[in-house]
Length: 208
Image (cartoon, rainbow, N blue to C red; front, side):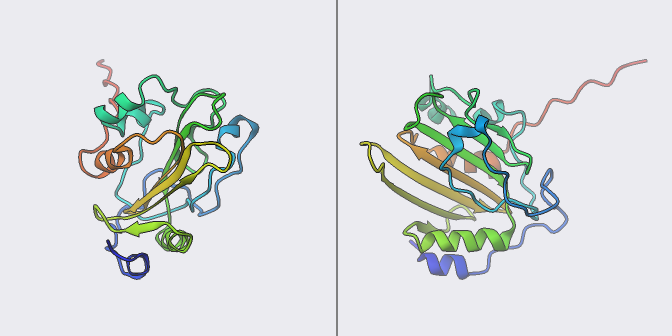
């Protein structure tokens, strides 16, 4: 395992400069604060989201896009768990980040929240470096940087945690409480950078 300081201080390959992250925002402003409809996201830590250079496409057509980034094994573990239920805050944000929220609206201590969005390289690396200083384990798998940490809920007998993966100007940030499917982050990495996401079906061209 590579030490966090070495991982985050080292130089990574520069993504293709010809791409600027399709659908990314024009300014690296912080994400808007949670509205009452996003009450399920209260307490979810933010990560820098903004314009970045990237060749990676983000999931489309949410909530189906949240399923497309997972494999059959992970989906089987999440069977019966609501996805982006009303009032849970899932969907495509104004800053273009995709938010997938798994959990019952009335089960505050059981949820799985993943934010996938474009993140400026310098800001992303600084944020990951800061997490390494907070006890996160950081290393360099699959051509990216991964940081993760788990802990016990302060008042309930459930495990909470956070796993982040940064590659090619894109952050995959998952925060969970009492819901951590095995292979979840690996499935997302595979979907975004190995097998690729399903492409939207083009509308047929009308004939004269």
